[in-house]
Amino acid sequence: MITLSTKKVPMARSEHPCGVGIRHAGLGAAALILSACATAPDWISASGASREQVQQVQQERAGGRIEGIELIDVDDALARKLSASKRLGEFSDFFPAASSNNYLIGPGDIIEVSVWEAPPAMLFGAVVIEAKAGPTTTRVVTFPEQMVTPAGTITMPFAGRVLVKGRATQEIEDDIVRRLHGKANLPQVLVRVIKNNTSNVTVVGEVNHSTLMALTPKGERLLDALAAGGGVRQPVNRMALQLSRDNVTATMALDSIIRDPKQNIMLKPGDVVTALFQSQSFSVLGATGKNEEIQFEAQGISLAQALARSGGLNDSRADARGVFVFRFEEARLVAARNPVKHVGESVPVVYQIDLRDPASFFITQNFPVQNRDVIYVANSPAAEFEKFLRLVVSVAVPSVTLNRAWQN
Image (spheres, rainbow, N blue to C red):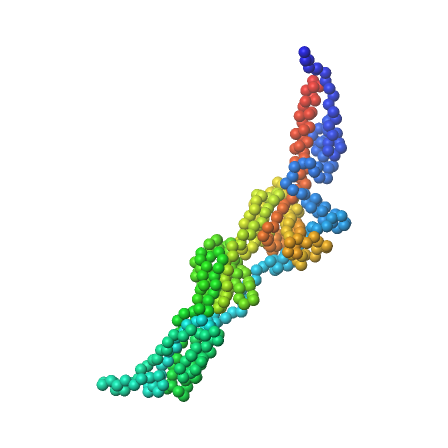
């Protein structure tokens, strides 16, 4: 037979993690005792490191005990430097402005030459007798279509071999007129392109259909090429256009080109226009309105915009002095001390922003967010202490109540 003993067993003395007994301490006294702890114990659940823990890593690194991660306080000068380095160049800076698209003839083009000669025609005209009008001459002679030779020439009767490669139609007309001077009576020449095989622009990438767009003397521009490809397949604000010309390649956000007509530059033969989908995002963690991966536009966003899109700082949890941006940064942009190199000569960097300083709100407007950044907002010490208090109270109150029940 099993019997239950009713003998009161004295409770073991409960110990506070800081080493202070709380068995006979009231809640007010417990609060004063707990306030002696600088930070909450490591075994309390948390969404990440505190501001002090992040800074401690840098302090240990400075003392020679750890290498690899650089903690940098962000000021206005650094924000502007990073903004300038991350800014996409403008097409007007890379490619000089032109009044025309330099529509030029090249080998393989098929052209047609017509010649008018003033009466009385001496070279190309044939005499015709009409009863009423009297002697007249034919007004135009059109020669058979010719393909420009690999050497860039065509053959013209009484003018010989005419170099047409790399020349506009008007230049060719003027050259033929000079060659016929003294042979024909006030000749007039018209050169017409029957088939354009060389003055083209290639349009590829995230367009509805890739195409080879023929240039005309009209002077097609960048957005004309995009329209010739049927437009883009993704939202405009997520697209960028890359233009390759000779040995120069530049990229700009599509919506920036649309807003600034100066960037809608004139195209030239051989240009390659590539529509690029910019799948850029950053992750936000910690004491913010929401923790998630957030997509952003091809033209980029600032840290102020990124924080706003994440719902801002959580007023009851966030440490405004503990806003961090974790990034693999180009080594040339930071004065890192013996950093550990990452892929592409980048180094691990943690940027720290103190939002308690009102001036930092101007800094965040210049600080650029880049693809794959991690924005982390640490919990405030008060939030961690409150969490610790709730845990202690949840353990202490039932113990005190049970002890009183046994004593009674």
